[in-house]
Image (cartoon, rainbow, N blue to C red; front, side, top):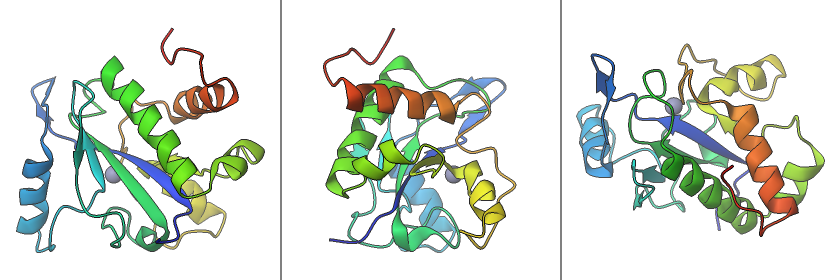
Length: 170
Ligand SMILES: [Zn+2]
């Protein structure tokens, strides 16, 4: 299994005139091929209704954050995180999938023990890793979007890991 150290959240940044679109993995695959990549760079795409569509095989190196791809796993949410927040279904599905990946890659203990370590992070938080000397290349993107609060996301994940039967919403 590939060694993964961080789970990274993205937005498709797909919207216009104040409206966010329910982007498919097939659309993103097409965009990324148009950029000259072999295929979609993300590992999964999470649609407005919470459905998870597969992207790049997680055993292959993704293409999503320059300088950090080899040791990361990437979720991309349909829509545009600067225009609209994630739907409740996207948030719930994203939290569940992130927990599954923390478990798959043996990251639960570190996630819980080191809240500042950005084991789960938004793309834009690569700038914090750069500041700490842990990533080489900063980004100008707001990804996964100004309306996606990664501290809140990490709190939800933590709460669910600590008491798994607690409902994710509310
Ligand atoms: Zn991104």
